[in-house]
Image (tube, rainbow, N blue to C red):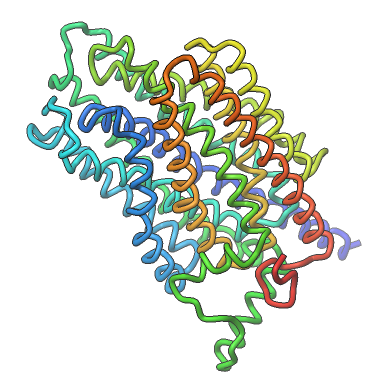
Length: 477
C-alpha cells in the first residue's frame, strides 16, 4: 500500500515538473514574441520613412547576405556554451542593441527627425538588418531550446498552449504600440518627423527591448526550478548525444568536423532537413509578396509615420488575437487527433484557399483579410507543427541547421518574393493579377508535395525511435 502511494506521488511529481517546464517556456515565449512583434512591425515603417518604401525588396535581398557572417559566429558560439545559455546571451544582446537603436531614433541627423528619405542613410539599413536578425537569433534560438528539452508527446500536448501564451505577448506588444501610435496619428498637426511622432517610436522600441531583457531571467529560473531529467527531451536523441560526448572525451572520432559550416552541411545532406527548409521557404515567399502589398495600403491614407505604424500594428494585433483562439482551441485538438503529417498538409491547403479568395476579390480589404488569416495560420498552427519536426534530430540540426534555415533560408525566400515583387511592378496593372495567380498556384502545389513527404518521414522516425542526423541511423534520409 505504501509502495503504491509512493508511486502515485512520483507520477504526480513528474507531471508537476513537466507542467512547470512548459509554464516557464510559455512565459519566456510571451516576452520573446511580445518584443519581436513590436520590432518587426517598426522595421518596415521606419525603413520606409528613412530610406523609402521602394527599397524594401532590395533590403530583404541584401539581408540574406548580411546575416551570413552572423550565422558563422553563432555556429562557433553554439559549440562553446550550453543550450539555455545561448538563449540568454542572444536575448540579452538584442535587448541592449534595441535600446541603443531606440535612443538613436531620436537623433536629428540619423533618426526619424530627419525627414529626407534617401538610400544613402546608413542608419535605416542597419536598423532593418538588426530587426531581420531577431527571427534567426532570438525566436529561432528559443524554439531550438524548447525542442531540445521536449518530447514528441510533450510537444503535441503543450506546444499549442505555449504558442497561445506567445499570442498574448503579441497582443500586449501590438496593442500597446497601436494605442500610442493611434493617439499621435489622430493629431493632424503631427507631421512626419515631428517630436511626438519620433518620441512614440522611441518609447515603443524601448518597451520591446525591455520585454526581451526579461527572457534571460525566466530561463534562469527554469533551469533552477525544473529537475535535470525533465530537460532531456526526445530520449533517443539525449542518449545518442550523451554517447557522442563520452566518445569525444575518450578521443574517438564520432562525427565529421565541419566547424562553422556544419549546419549548412547537415542541411544539404539530409532531405528531411531540406524539407523543413521548404516548409518555411514557401510560406515566406507568399508572406513577402502580401506584406509588400499591405505596406502600400497602409501608406495610402497616412499623413505621418505614426499613422503608417498604427495601421501595421492594427493588422498584427488582429493576427495575434485570432492566433490566440486558434492555438488555444484548434491547434491542440488538431495535433492530437490528426498528427503531424496531416497537420503539415493542412497548412498549404488552408493557405491556398486564402490566396484563391484574394485573387477573386482583389480589393484592399480582401488583401488585409488574407494577410491576417495567412499570418494567423502560420503563427498559431503551422509554427508549432513545423517546430515539432526538429525533435527527433541531433543538437547540431536543432541549433546550427535551424539557424541557417531561419536566417539564410528565410531571407532567401524573402529575396525570392521580393524579386517577384520587383518583376510584377514592371508588368503593369493588366498583367499583375494573372502573374500573382500563377505564382501562388505553383508555390502552393510544391508546398503541399513537400508537406506530404516530410510528414511521412517524421512519422517513420518517431515510430522507429530514430535519430535523424546520426550516421547509420536514418543517414541520408
